[in-house]
Length: 345
Ligand SMILES: *Cc1c(COP(=O)(O)O)cnc(C)c1O
Image (cartoon, rainbow, N blue to C red):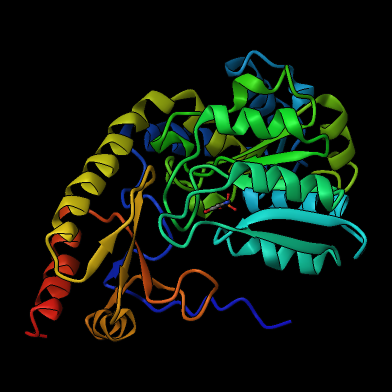
């Protein structure tokens, strides 16, 4: 397998990984620091794991047995692929283009990844075709990212429910960007026991450094996936930090609103540029198509600006994905973009 290319440079403007561009709100940081100062560093994490599970469960009116916490939702997604994959006879169906790791996890799990192409025009998903593929392939896992990374568009709750209703294998909805969109499928969990939802603290809550994600599912699925984890798999520093961020999640709403309003502002600005297709987004990033994406990306790189270029990934030729930075940062990359389209750069 080729290595996953995270060739990171020390970018002046880093808008390539959909991170939150602001550090924790000061009020939250203060509480986190004081909580960290009383950690029992000599003990394995015992209660902290369950405290966070209980807190998340309460918010969704579920039980702690419905919650599993992992090192980022990536780890949880990987575990799901390993547990439901594990053999080339086991098919895992997901749209394409979507999160590139789905293909990699399917391969690593020795399962057969079955991508369902999104529309080349607007990246919409043919729901009937998706359902048909899952059923025809007798898939062991179906995956949808909502809203979708890297295209940015969201599927409606009706579409998600239609899929849930018409397939019977485990159905993962990856809600990494749901805080920017709001249309969560968590309300469907009780009705559809094969539904699994993955969430992360890395994006809207700006906790990418801590690696914390969680999964909501039936207690049977949680118990099954939990068997693949070693004891004490989460470290206490990440657990208590996430616990406090979750308690204080209201404090993050202004950050989320700023990211959304910057996205709307930049979508409007980008639409003014000739030759640039701006795709709708319900997230904190924007996908654009531009015939000279590769050259533009080289310009960005030479200016210390890191955006995501997809090379020849299926369905993403000449596309760039740009995460929302702070206002000044967005103005900076935009000015280079504009100058490039005008032949001034
Ligand atoms: C960022 C992201 C994740 C997970 O991130 P973690 O940091 O591992 O929690 C999962 N799915 C998608 C689609 C993402 O973009």
